[in-house]
Image 1: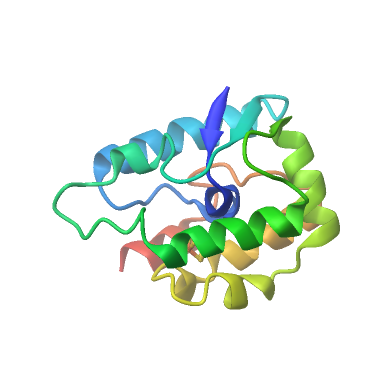
Image 2: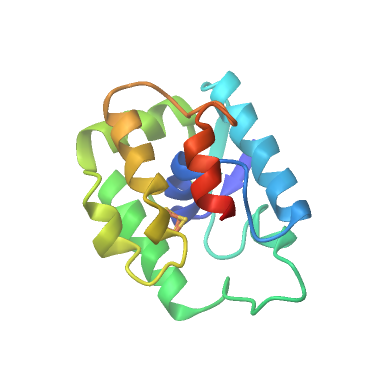
Length: 149
Ligand code: SF4
């Protein structure tokens, strides 16, 4: 079972293999690939820092305990009709996103996130709405070029 906080349910949709550090990205890649290859993998919603936050690099400002991040978690869980400790398969998270989220919601819910400008999270929501699942990493070189510029 993979423990995830609310906003990471959305971050995984836009993840393209680039993260805050190599170690952080390696962990995110492992989670992303597990969910992409096996959408029946169970996830548990947690309050506050999760499995991914544990790999946040020491040399960057730690934002995982900021109030605004908790607010973002809460808003996303509300949209998906989820609460802390809920356990469900990733496939069901995608189904709820398909029914209850629009790409434009990212601009509102994630207003202050530095990754938002790349547009990958909106694209990820759109893919989910179209029931395409998580994008295989490396499948869209233009996206990676955008992120690595
Ligand atoms: S904009 Fe930031 S917080 Fe929102 S889903 Fe994307 S990476 Fe996650």
